[in-house]
Image 1: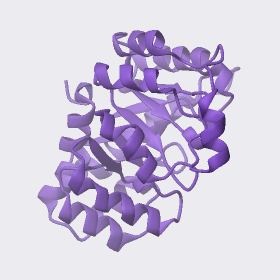
Image 2: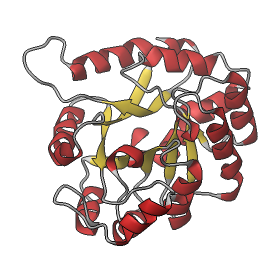
Image 3: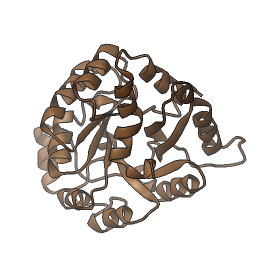
Amino acid sequence: MIGGEHDLRVFDLDAALLPDAGERRPTPAERLDGEYRQTGVVRAAVAPPLGDPTAYLRVNNAVARLAASRPFLAVARLAGPRDPSETTAARVRNLTASRAAHHPGPDEVESIAYDDRFHAVRLAPARDGLPDAATLDTLAETGLPALVRAGRGFTPAVAVETLAARGVPTVLLSFGGHPLDRDLAADAVDRLADHDSLWLGTAHVPYRDLAEWAINEHPDRIVFGSGAPDPHPAVGVTSLLTLDVPKNLLRRVATDNPARVVPALDP
């Protein structure tokens, strides 16, 4: 138990849980639960993996059922009708974009927020589209945190403008640059000084110096994420523990900050 050996309670804000299917043993949920126990991760926020956006309602509910009997907190994936890219063509398309049947609207987001099975939402706008303005406004009103996959197709700048600036508690996974985009990640770190609703997650951040700089400069705004189940959560915990930062700051990243974003992690 890596976390236990270092007297560190670890909460994971970046994990995916494949709904169980067939007769495989161990099931994906059992396997992830076992890997967390081996690693010493206390609790984790888990979302369905990327898939068919039209099926997110079904898989969100499946993940919520699996999380109920394990040290997991369910996160609901959201898709939307808007193209988040910054091209002129995208802006024109967005003027007439409307929700399809599988796109959650304000009522659905409000339902998720007040359903005690779910504790956050997860978005990958470059792949699944961005919810419309009314839906994002409702998300901000609920206070539900958004765990967001950013990158060239949905930059940290656009994420801040559309989410954090609205007051949505926003965690940019992988520092907003996935997987090796150092410039985007550095830009995301710079934005922490200006936005109280913005946090950065540590999964898949390969640059030690960038991670150490971010933690030292913004110790209350960096949250641990492993990216499990690929890679094994031990990879993320080990990467965190080998950073050259004070132990009290590691505790903030691994324990205090994730629980600030998702309070149910530390009931």
